Structures are given as C-alpha cells and as structure tokens.
Amino acid sequence: MVFRPQLAPERLRTFVTLADEVGLDDVWLWEDCFLEGGLTASTAALSWTGSVRVGLGLMPVPFRNPAVAAMEVATLARLFPGRFVPAAGHGVLEWMDQVGARAASPMTLLREWVTAVRALLAGETVTTSGSYVRLDRVALDWPPGVVPPLLVGARGPRTIALAGECADGMVLDAGITPDTIRSAVARAAAPGPHEVVTYLPAGASAAPTEAEQAAYNRPTEGIAVGTPADVAAVVRRFADAGATTVVLQPAATDLSIEPFISLAAEARNILRG
Image (cartoon, rainbow, N blue to C red; front, side):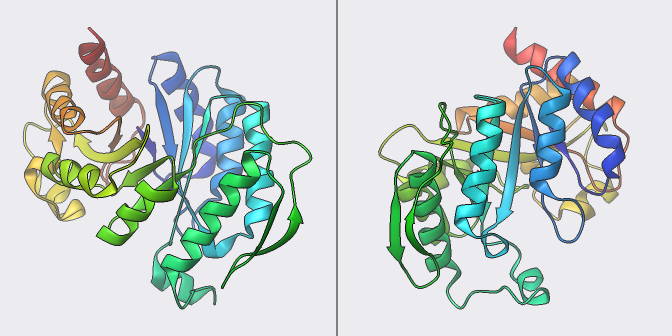
C-alpha cells in the first residue's frame, strides 16, 4: 500500500513498521510537490523495517541531476540490497513550471535521464552530451552489488512505450482498469522481464462512497472496496491483466492508518492462501 504524503512525515514510522509486522510486501511513497522528499522518506522507511520493499513512485527527473540521483539510489541499494525500487517520471508539469524546471521536451529529458542513470547503476563509465543530460567520464565509486530496477512512471502512450524500451518496468496511475493494464503491457512490449506497478484506490465501504468517487474521479471497475475478499478479487483481476505489483491507495480523505493496513493485510493473506 501507499503512504500518502498528505500524512505528516512523523507518521511514517508507525505506518511502515506496522506494514512490516503484518507481512505486506511493499510500501510505496510519493514525491508530490510540495509535501515530502521521496529519497529521505525512503531511507527512513528502509531503516525502520526488515523485510518490506520500499518503492518510490516517482522522482520527477527535472528536479535531479542524473549523477546525483544515481549516487543516492546506489547508496540505498547497497545499504538495503533488493529492498528499494525507484521510479522516475516527468513530474506534474504545472509543478515543474512553479519551480522553473519544466523541460521543453519532457520525453527527451526522461529518455536521456533514465538511460544515463541505469548505466551508472550498472557500474558503467558514462560520457554523453544530450539535449539535457551531459556527463563526462562519470562513474560511481560505489555501484550497487544488487542493481535495483529503475521504473518509469507512465500515463500516456508515448511514455508507456518509452518505459518498455529503456526501463525495467513502469508505474501506472491510479484509477485505471484491467483493460488499461492489458493495453499498457501490450504497448510497452518490453523485450524482457518488466515490472508493472499500478495504484489501486481501495477502501472498506460496501460500495464506492460519493467522497471516494469524487476523490478519484475514476470508473468503479478501477476501485477496490468492500471486504478483504472483495478487495482481493479486484487485485486478482489486475494481476491477471498483467500487473506484477498492485499498490492499494486510500482516498486522500481517509488518513487513518491501522484500519487500511489491516484491510490490505487480510486481502494479501487471501491472495497468498
């Protein structure tokens, strides 16, 4: 499930330790402007837990020089092998405008950035002179022994295709349907193993409430509500459509921690059973 950044940072420790205790597979974090830093929150979450995987979906690439990003990701990958999954994306373009970082060609920037960071994490020496990414004989002194997958946050068809071409997977937005998953997997046409992460709005109500429907503004088939068995059934449909990781997402209006983690844990137990 996701720790929404509408929750105060000081609530993160309770959230991730409880998620770890009940046996959830993943906790995902966001880096929405201007709420909480994704890499700092990921570091704290990893240090407070022992088995849960921490995903960062996603880092807006206009914010970060690729060499610095590779250093940060490599450090976490070495400290917590196999437990950190970073994702990168365009960022919300209006927010990029606010901080003076919007690129004239977000697609070009994302392609150059992902290509360079993946090469650096693989231990390569990178020299490149692109439209946005310019590196001269850059190599990490401490590349990770277990190279983490680098995913791309994707929504539109061009970004989905880019994720299939040059990333290790993709993170899809909330509120999509199983048919959307199938279409995205087909469009990505990844040549090898490709993680497909999707956020699934969820809640314990018998049917989507008006508040949930308004908060997500998504079709009801893209929302999982009801009992743990009901939620598990929706998760299974998304998995059957090609999702490899389904991240349950509470509404922004529901910031209680324990009930939602309990719902996620019971749904997971049903799926694993």
